[in-house]
View 1: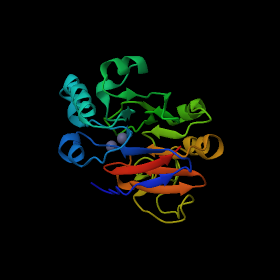
View 2 (view 1 turned 45 degrees about the vertical axis):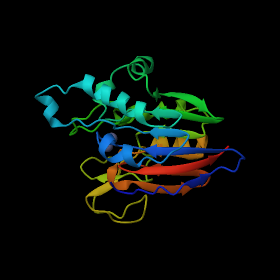
View 3 (view 1 turned 90 degrees about the horizontal axis):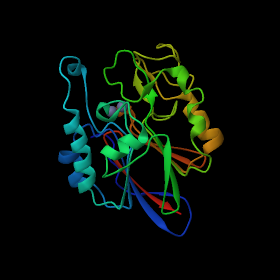
View 4 (view 1 turned 135 degrees about the vertical axis):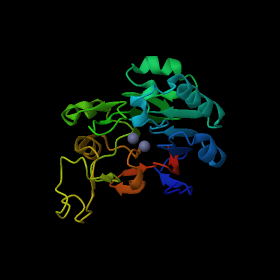
Length: 253
Ligand SMILES: [Zn+2]
Ligand SMILES: [Zn+2]
């Protein structure tokens, strides 16, 4: 596991404490690594890539029914009162279906797909989509870059905790250079003013714009880019990339 900061981070300034435990990109290590170490809390948020698929699926169809069973088994075992999940690009087992249909096959968790839920007075909203990457075999919930133009307009203003698999551009979003529309590999980065040869920012600029200019959630939970796990704060928003990590927030409502 990478970053694993289980000291609770304070969010908000209300009277009532709601403890949020954020996981992402557990990639089938849920039972061995995560379940024995999960801190208690009120809301467990998993921001995608519960499963793992790879090139081998081109030759043999994975046992998707077993993948779905593992998701349900995990969420049935965790002690948190409320459990939220959005898909990620590896979650092929549940892809290609409407939110209502995925919810039916995942009865142990509240599944968010361009939808929201209010828990303990906090408005959560979740969306699983990431950008299509032509070399990847993991194409659950992917869209071409141009298709994000208006996608994030659907995030309601008044969202307190946004959950996406996709990072926002320039925030905990470094990944391998092999796919970038935004940057030349030898330039000084015009986002973070550093040079990071072989790596670049792969988060979504439209998502960043929606968050910083309109939605302004207190917390944004995401993952996807494993090497960029960590925290970042801009204005009133705390950003959490919890890929391969466990992070805890005390949200005061
Ligand atoms: Zn992942
Ligand atoms: Zn991913």
